[in-house]
Image (cartoon, rainbow, N blue to C red; front, side, top):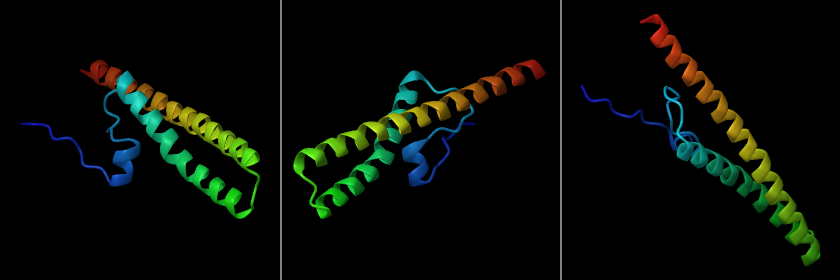
Length: 103
């Protein structure tokens, strides 16, 4: 019997398209961390850009604010994704070890 991969919703397939049964490879970890960092940071930068435009903020100050928001978002959401992947990998390894222990 052939195993078919599970189908996920659009949002889930973008942010974490893995079942959690097996630990993620380093390439998969990078993909999840980068997608989280970009997907969640983009709305923050866009909202900040709109606020700086409508508030008529000077260009230099607007660029500094946008860079701070961009870097903060990338760091915060990248670390959040890394923590999530670490927890999923740890759980997958424990499940795998438990299955072999029970057999």
